[in-house]
Length: 332
Image (cartoon, rainbow, N blue to C red; front, side, top):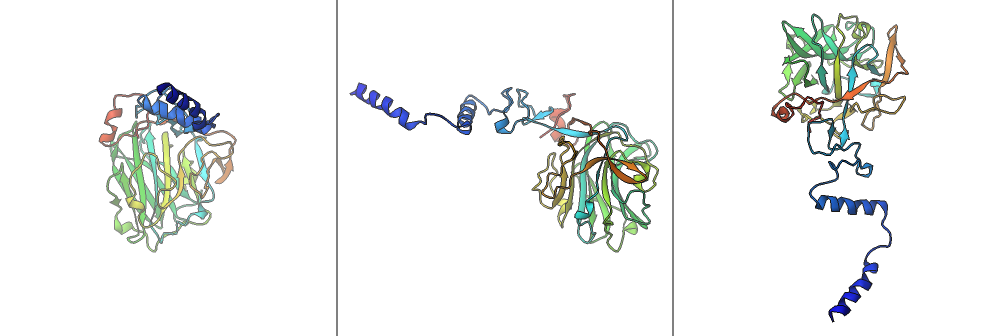
């Protein structure tokens, strides 16, 4: 009886399993088997594109350049060639009637000495702030310290300055235009928004000129409205623009999703295809080009922007596990 049962099972087996497995089905079987042996495919030292892996360093450490089997990169700003521009910013409704924000992760190699060091400018290049609205964000010297700032200028000025930051470490700066009070506010490393001096608030609510565009990287002096500035030297990542009533309350993230509420443009700084160097991750496709300026006119460059492995984001206890690692990590 036992032999008969075994024979029936053996004969039935081919009917229970397909003769061939599709690639996806086979992959699922392998994944299940790997997981059953103590872990997922990520970390098994084999790059698995079907799983969406772009790398696999054979470990599950959160603080290295290959995080969750994805290589993370940042825009490496070193000289005047490190400049990207978005000339279609008019597609975004920064009309000042609704809250808007621009935020970014940044890493400063060289601290500013005597002048501001902007790494992002929105406005009409070469036009002074008295004639057109200009928004800047970056770092600046304050006595012996370095601070991050958000600035908005047009006839009057609204500026919000963050607490002191440490160069050679990652920080996050969020700049928020508050439409109700008519001022700029800043938050550093996920902290509370700090208001600018209301005496300098801009009313009525300002809106950017339709010919305004966004500059990201190392600013030419003319692009900052003729202001005296120092060139930014460092890394930039996860630049996000948002419009809506809750832009100042979004949770801080090291890697944003294009579906994050109110997001209108998002640059992961992942190397893009030739011709479009900074892809917008949202459906708006507000892709930025590598550019140079000739008489304040944006000219597209043929060179490729430089990217570097990201560094560990330096704030809060979440960074503690990364302190011992000199390698450039991305903390999850």
